[in-house]
Amino acid sequence: MANIIVANVILGISSLISVITMQFKDKRQILIGMILVNTVALFSFLILKKYSAIIVCLIATVQTYIKYKFDQKNKNVPIIIQVILIVISILSGILTFKTWFDILPVASLVFYILSVLQSKEKNFRLYTLGKVSGWIIYDFYAKAYTGFIFYICILISTIIAIIRYDIKRESVIKVCEDS
Image (cartoon, rainbow, N blue to C red; front, top):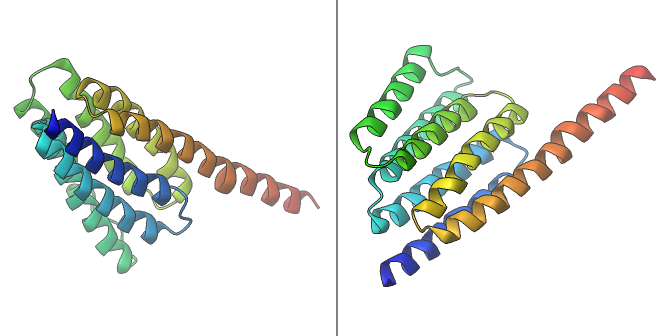
């Protein structure tokens, strides 16, 4: 029982960082935030012994770091690296599969990989909606209740960010173009 409480506190910290990260406007800040989010979440799933989620967090951390480094050089991540990361994600899901719920972190990871590879923050936030949906269900199953609650907060935060930065911004641009 103590392990579940400690893991939930750690996952809560990770989720809080994620809620804050979704409100960043700059892509580099978002990537740094997501590296931190995944690293902290990894420790919570390690305590819960949820191996598919551990692997997912590890891959997500490495993938985000790779994207960050390519962005620093103003280059795109090569397609081969993207494909390798997705294949590794799927293979990790197969290797750690115990229940049908174990598919959710892998599906969320694929959404995550696709989100991080986006050059526009708008697309990043849209893929985040898919990622978060899978984690909401998985965290409830894994008894990571703090994660479940905070992923709902992340979902709401992401929707707010989409409205603030993407929908309102597009409306302003369209009005300016029509003038």
